[in-house]
Image (cartoon, rainbow over all chains, first blue to last red; front, side, top):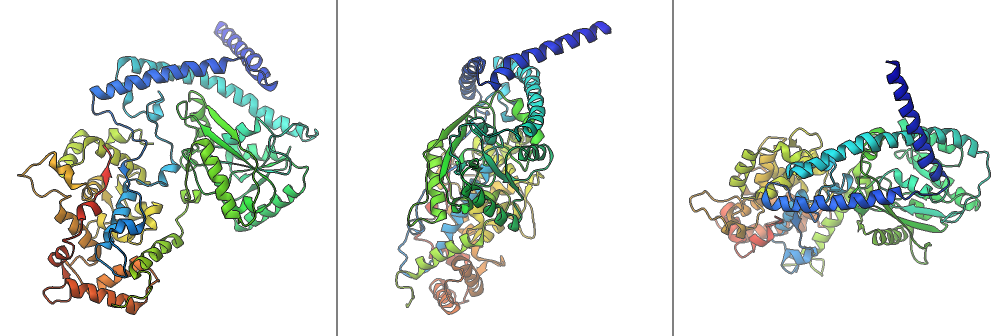
Length: 407
Length: 195
């Protein structure tokens, strides 16, 4: 029994030694041992093989589901007038209802908005159980690789990441208390007094940007593990945490942000104007609040590579801890970050137009779809004014150019 | 995301739906994925609120009428079979050419059945005729507050006048078919489902 304890202790000490000296210390000083790059290359080769194997299997067994990245239906684009198929000329025809009917059924079969709030569907399987759709029964070799993958992810990668996370977290809580006493000296990509905006997919966005520069953050208060992190971060830098549903809070936030930007020596603020996590296939409406403050905007586009693991945090479905567990047992998180040239409000442009301009730039750079829908639809209903818009359009269609129908 | 969805739909069910609606195997599994993603309560049925959650449907002026078409008389929940049956009305007609079965009853997506679907959009109380009142109500849904009551009334009157052939001041289904005989119903009421 004692021998077993000694062995276990010895293994544990070796483990800590490896982790600390080969991973933590080099990371703290910005060095890299090149292991990550090699790992990703091997992974890509395996995933490509798996894709080919699945494609072959699909030809043999027609019951394997075919993912349709472009959607279930093919929509014909066109304005209301074109699709009605008749000139308006101030008349109503009973066939007009067919237009609304078809549009309605199309949106029931497939719509652009609700799919953004759940994880992206992959064109092929990336050997993770959670994205599995009966793929693992296609061939024996695929199943074997999948089982190996499970073992590697849960027995090697996961403990490794847990250890790192534990070290990192305790370091954070202790360290932030110390850092609060030190003077600020690092070079930032976005400059002091500026506002950095980015598209939002997961809280990890923050970690990634923070690797590269220091920011003051603005965000929703959370409970649990996130709350602990947020409160400890406040000790070292001034951040602005608020409650999304509180109207008063929002005004207070805007005035605090204005004060922060005006004091030019403070850190640049990091804001996610979508207001919520989106699944990284599109960029949704940017709330104009951040763009009214003044100051220079530094847009950043963040795109996660979905082959290696799904980074999207579905906050309605998973709590922070289960999200972290899923992330830590994926293959890897591979992310592309693009820093775009700074933008400012131009003459004759209001905050909403400016916000749209920045959003399009980010969407274009990141290869994401640019949507005008509000990310708030994740939690709330759509505003009635949009329906009224549709009704107005139809009314002017049947009334014709003259306005009054006199037949 | 739908990782367990296809395992919950049994092969026999897929076959039955295939026979009844004419959708292909892969289309059925895709639409089942869609059905489960809309089913927030995860109880195998959709309620009216589940449909209302689709923003593009919520802003559609006839959104409520379309949602109503999914629910049989007096019921508040629709299961996957009912969902597929209603969607089947919108399959393109030419798809039937591939598997023409002359002994089968009329397919759900025939021209007549598409027209019946449209008729039921107007026929609010399901009494098989469109009264002036019902027409007015549906018109009001489509135009909102932008047209006055008198103007809307005259539009409704004119429409009924042109369609009504038997003088009962209502539009029956046959009269409705006559009014729409020149309209390309196949194109206006078909959705291209990808295979």
